[in-house]
Amino acid sequence: MPTTFFGWVTFLAQKYWPLFLTGAINTLLIALVGTAVGFALGLLVAIARTINLRRGAGRLKRWSLAALKGFLTAYIEIFRGTPMIVQAMVVYYGASQYLGINIPAMAAAFVVVSVNTGAYMAEIVRGGILSIDKGQTEAAIAVGMTHWQMMTGVILPQAIRNILPSVANEFVVNIKDSSVLNVISVTEVFFMSKSAAGTYYRYFEVFFITAVIYFVLTFTFTRLLRLLENKLSGSSSYTVYGSQTDPKAEIEYKKEAQ
Image (cartoon, rainbow, N blue to C red; front, side, top):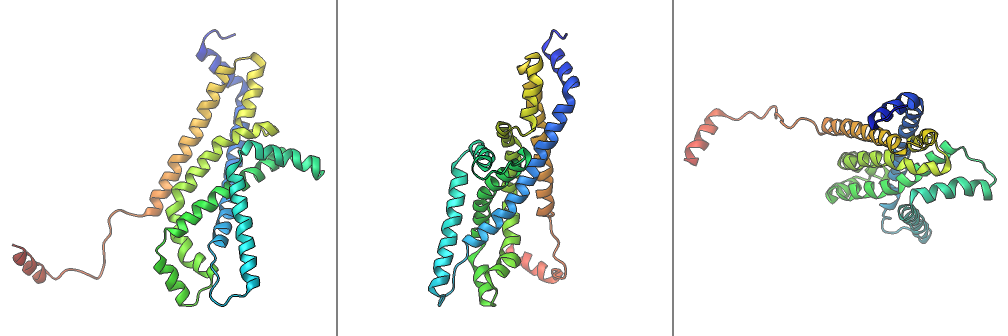
């Protein structure tokens, strides 16, 4: 048996690499699905919360909209105000105890991460929408666009570009926060690490490997998302075609400046 720290790390990595690999794949899958579904959910919630009825709308529409906004606000506050580990326990065990539904652990993980991310994304997207100049909203309304047309055609394309760093950060957070799902036996990296550590009771060495895996995942995807962000930003230098300066006018301008 190994006698040094790095000897144990090498031994455990070689012996349990299938467990670590399976855990890393499941962690990435949960983070990807949760972020994608949460982003879509956050978009819908943010669009609904920014609806403003025009003058002359009936009482039924106003009450319905107020009820909808109240429900969405409650959803955001509840899921942002409670830990994901508690949400996982409520969904997984609550569905079994009170609804008689035995949800697979991975399915419960997808639901919890998606709904939790959606609550955060709703506020991120709403902030991105509010960052767009109000003149564009007024112009869209002036030409007769509906709220949905205005959002999808004018506001959201700009807002999404502005919030991309926050969306990327949420994805990285989900990679790390998926570790709390081990309480419902989701086979992510942390759960697999506990299984590997229990055989030889080498917890320090195993979780050193776990820390390296998390760091590699977050560092790699942070850099990839940064490249995507730079790609969407475009070039830092632009050439305006069809507007060449008249040489004579430029000479006269220089003489006046002197």
